[in-house]
Amino acid sequence: MKRNVAINWDQKTGECQVIPPNVVDVVDHGAVGDGIADDTQLDGNIVAPDMASWTGDDKSKWIVFSNVQGLSIIGDGTIDGRGSNWWQSNLDAHQRPIGTMFQNCNKLQLQGFTHINSGSLHISIADSNGVSISNLHVFAPESSPNTDGIDISRSSNVDIRVTDIGTGDDCIAIGGGSSYINITSVSCGPGHGISIGSLGANGGVDTVEQVSVKNCTLAGTTNGARIKTWQGGSGFARRILFNEITLTNVTNPILIDQFYCPYGTCINETSAVEVSDVSFIGFHGTSSTENAITLECSEIKGCSNIILDDINIVHVVPGQVTQASCFNAHGTSGVTTPAIDCLSA
Image 1 (cartoon, rainbow, N blue to C red):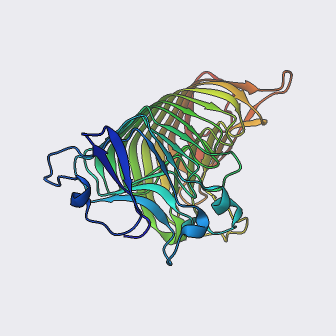
Image 2 (cartoon, rainbow, N blue to C red):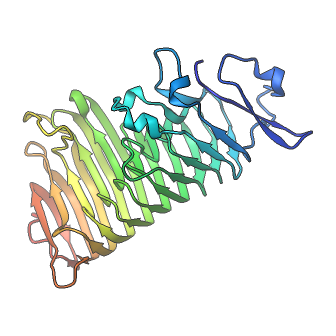
């Protein structure tokens, strides 16, 4: 396991020890390994090696927990990815290290600590069930590329609460294979907002359902509540609720983008992820652009049962107006500013 870090709490000295990044027997450093004892508490600072110290071909991840059941990491310490040189290297995101990865970690609890300046995304949750995340602080500069706060993929029953995130990419991204995700009282900004997706890349089959995002605040983000899918994929994004969202100077406050193409040139495809049963309710605040609501749905599938109500999004510049735009979007709207005349039944 290259460039991974073992953390050990020494109950005798009261210190958090960081074991050097190479292959070690954690039992030699105080771990019990009986599946019962809680050996991990994070109260100190964990600092990544500088970029020049990384060796080997795989630089895609730093701290990895794999197949660990019932893991809790609780404390007020800091994980520092020292990402500035990585961001300036022009390396692809997959060639820069994820800060902390949790793979197949059921009944996982993360609480209280700070995670900063990852080379790539900060916290990855994959193939896990029953995850509780609360009171985290995740930060990187707005200019730092691909530094998502928390990415969730192929996971279920994930609960994120009372967490502050400000990065150069999505604050939270919910990827394919995920269900029963609850996000409550998250503060996001700067960054790219709270996103479902991207889904359906490279013709893939992706599914996301039963997502609830409530009582969240977004400030200075490039997106607010976003669903993004590629052309050519399949699967679904359904039963999704965004409720009671406060916006301050957000570029795309409400966005469904079924033509997601970050590289600028993508060919038209004849298949698409199906988006349905999505509700945007209780959005209030300011947009930095005229298009406060954009529902760009697939020409093939369209979006169905899209509900918008109790929305008041005004332009951040007094006297300028906001508007809604739609393509092949079907659903209903209630009391909204701007009015959503483009939504069809």
